[in-house]
Image (cartoon, rainbow over the protein chains, first blue to last red):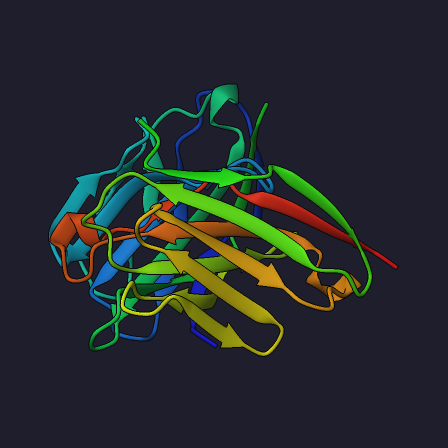
Length: 115
Length: 115
């Protein structure tokens, strides 16, 4: 089982607050991802990174930002939370085996509620 | 444009029955097709994957069938058990393809196996 951690697991916060969702992995994977998912629903890629100082926006437009200063750490920040940001946020990292595509390892997620 | 179409959205199967989930893709450059399983409160986890050089791959009760000419692949769960109740996501990507190596997920199928 992969070691990828997300904190906090649950967060309830008021509108306008700045929040940072933490994601760390101990596997040394270069590629990392953030997905937004309503529980049990479609996965939407919002950010990804191929290594230190590399970040890209995903398919779903998001008001969040990310940084990648260390390989193992990929935090996501919302400068001003709104009720529309209420969702589950999943972090993942990936590695490719020779001849195969990347296997993504997901963290347990952060369930965010903005009041 | 949805590149990977998954059906059905939800599925109810009796214990011991066969669960079948279907996916269709559009991009003929895709050459890696994994399935992920997600239990409530958890992140998705790789279940089984196939490359287009084979038409079928079996791991225990789980089988992927792949039809390259039809651009379709499916997951079969034999002898379905209540513990298989989860959301299943098909995905596709291009091996070693930079940003094209990012997984493109289907919208998911919620499987419920009744005792």
